[in-house]
Amino acid sequence: MSLRICNFPFHPKFALQPRAQRSTRIFARTENDSPQQQQQLNLSVLRFTFGIPGLDESYLPRWIGYGFGSLLLLNHFSASAPISESQMRSEALGLSLASFSIALPYIGKFLKGSVVEQRTLPEEGEQIFVISSNIGDSLKEDLAWATYVLLRNTSTIAVLILVQGELCVRGYWNCPDQMSKAQLHDWFKKKVDEIGLADVKDTLYFPQYAGSALSWDILPDGTRSLFMQPLVQNISEPQKVNGFLLVASTAGYAYSDKDRAWIGAMAEKFRG
Amino acid sequence: MEIGSFFLLNGQLFHLLSLTSLATTSSMEARIILQIQIPWNPNRKFSRTPSDFPRFIRAYSSSSSTSQKPRSYRGPKPSKNLVADFISKNDDLVRSLPIYVGGASLLAVLFNRTVSGIAPVADASSSQSRADLLALGLAVTNLLTGLVWLSIRPKSITPVQPDGVEWKVVESGLPASVVSELLWAWESFKVATCCKSLVIVYNGICLIQIGMVAESPEDKKAVVVNTDKLMQGSVYRGVMKSKAQSYLANLSLYPGRSELPFLPANTQAVILQPLGDKGIAVIGGNTIRGFTSADQAWISSIGEKLDATLGRYFIDSDEISRVTV
Image 1 (tube, helix red, strand yellow):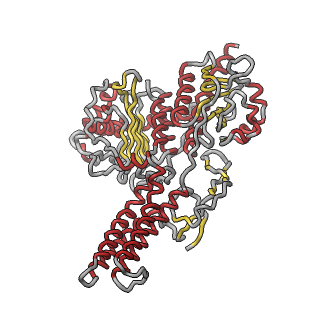
Image 2 (cartoon, chains in turn yellow, purple; image 1 turned 90 degrees about the horizontal axis):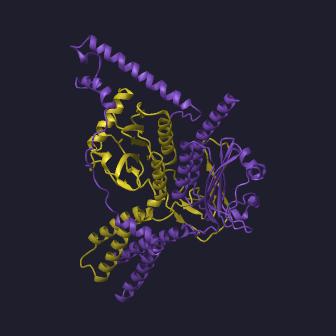
Image 3 (cartoon, rainbow over the protein chains, first blue to last red; image 1 turned 120 degrees about the vertical axis):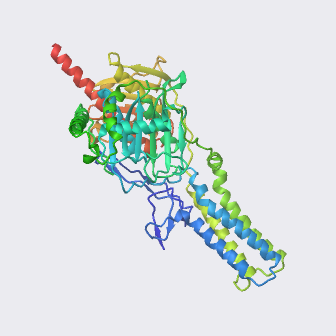
């Protein structure tokens, strides 16, 4: 067990001294193209951690809940009869506390400031970049830039943009290998038509996409979040949809309100 | 993650794309020729099913056909997550909930002991004590988790209404595509971040000044950007020299504030984004530390895009002016 100054200030581990408030902050961010790097060290909270790499202590209440709950049951069934009423009361209290502890990490995920899961790249399959050849150069450049930025700035692993009936697909998709670009383009077009994505009128957000419920086999394995934004032709006619923008990620709850606002802003670029 | 090289310099992207499209069309032609020569054995050379063969021919015609009415959407609709909504709305309450639960159960265990007449001795001898100990352990877990959640509560800072006037000035003579790109950038910043003012200066010209603008006290009119003065100031020069985005999270602490007189006086945070080496975007926000690191990443990406677009326009217009002269 060791004391370690944590780099991720909002990772809910057991705090040793929650009151140690020091407001010094050295702010940091890595920019891909800038040589300057500044560190963000939030020194105001010290974290208690076991120091085992890869162990996620935010789930500790859940494990303790399972462990103590099972011990309670063990205790109950191995106790010699009769079990007193006060013991029943304690056990009831203990079991309800255990179930509450098990639910704690799930609740903590929705609090402000909770850390978002990192995306994991699919092991198999490779990235594709397919763009229709029927569109003008400026639109091609915009599409290429937009897909690149979406892949870089959010935890997206797969992007699909349909605008004016033409597709731009980028990232990890579950498509057949050995197809040429034009074939892939048509294949995606066919799949999109099957699902009927071009007809969606509102934004869709599936933060916990369960692969069995949806039959979208074009999405890569391990997709956990999905966000879809239709491109509305004209603000005054919200029913007339000109295309859509689809992003998928392997992290659950990957798209916060802010991410969705930015993705909506990117979709605005292709309107009209 | 290898996303692949991405060139956003004037026209290099186009070349990259045209090469790939050339390669695919030539390979497709080659395949069609091969298939015409051995029409009775379409399976020999390719692992695809014969049904793919007619698709080759169809591929050319379908891409040029007009889009039919799209099939109706048959996927699932997203369900509302009541728990998530409740928690997001009642953040403070939920944060302190585990503490109350843990504390209350601690007291309940002791109360139970006293009420049932057993001495409150914490040993593991009887099964009652063991059950009590386990319940105590869980209560402590909840208590500690509640303390952790309270300690990491982000400080909520109220936005400050900027005092100034609404203003929208776009340099005349710019082509519609450039203007729409600038306005798109403004709309994105306005919607997704706490940005309330935007000024873009490129190639020595103030291209756009939009949003809330400081009101000059003498004549009650908006303060227009003095481009020369801005470009000679230390703020501009510093950003140009470092070629990196500069985030002034609390503008009142920054001495170079006086060089940005066009921003409302109570602008709380400013991002200075260099656009290549020829321009700068000044983005003013209404909350201290209001721009998150995600915002900064997005703003720098949009800055690169604006630089590419504006750079191309200005190079073209330079060439045109050189040709006409």
